[in-house]
Length: 400
Ligand SMILES: [Zn+2]
Image 1 (spheres, protein in one colour):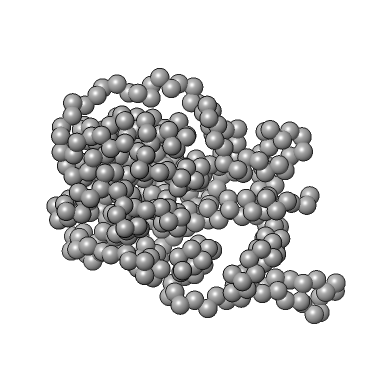
Image 2 (cartoon, helix red, strand yellow):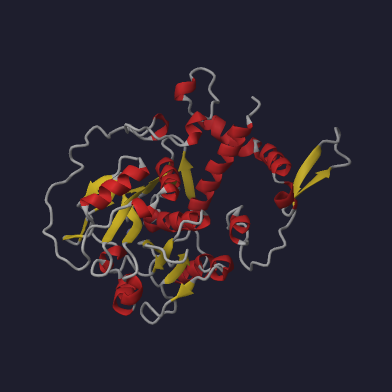
């Protein structure tokens, strides 16, 4: 089969997203562990983001170095985006640089650990980190906070609430990417109303993915900001069974969610709740009336009325029925293994300047048929870190 350009592009995009997420998950990061420090110093505080103005506050977990990280995009953003750098991994020493093995289960498009014995996958809240990075990359205006020590009692965000009220009061929305499932806009945390129905409705409409009010929130960092910021929510990022050996991340969902988030116009989202006011908690579970969400995973759509599907459902590799096309396992790995060259050739044609910096075409002289082969030159990068870890397009997006 000769792949189309669209197929190559989308395969590559899917692989890249998977790879970048898996790389975040691969480092277990209990708060204050050597591996968390290593990860934050090396990747969260990478020189490109530092150059964009990333700052660090004076928070310290048990006397260990390393504060909350802040990056503001735009002049006067009204949204604060929140994730946390620590995970609940247990049972290993978590030395600096230790990694666990991550896999993508093609049968349900969920990211899982290879070794179920280890404590967790780390989608809570590695997925939040990935989403923040993706929004930063897309230039979405906001204050991005990479919180420390969430899993041990929201200590990083408590520090911010105690020390930086003036900054917090500039925002109308505090949006955490730290919630399980695929439908929640959290309206209550620790028994208090943190977001209004008007907020939920106006945001859900723009996301177009059938998100709805969920009063079942427990706690994440944005709960510490309810005295200063109008709408303090937590959004489903598509992980399941967090903190357990069977934690999983729905790749389908989070890619679609990322694309939807990038398009949200926050000027059209309603901020109604009064900061600091105690609202009587509502008891109803407003998602209980949305039954039939059941078996909606995978390639057949999420069963929502507006049916916003991400574009890879239209790969078109199956000749039999274009409406229900779905990559088979073989086809996925075929793409994985065999289309790299074609992808690179395509990119070299479309983006010769950018690609010339990282890829060169060489003819292997003693090859029988003298076929040109692609070699990837070592990237001469001023960035002093593992360039293999960084997004392929990281530099392109961030170095301007
Ligand atoms: Zn979390």
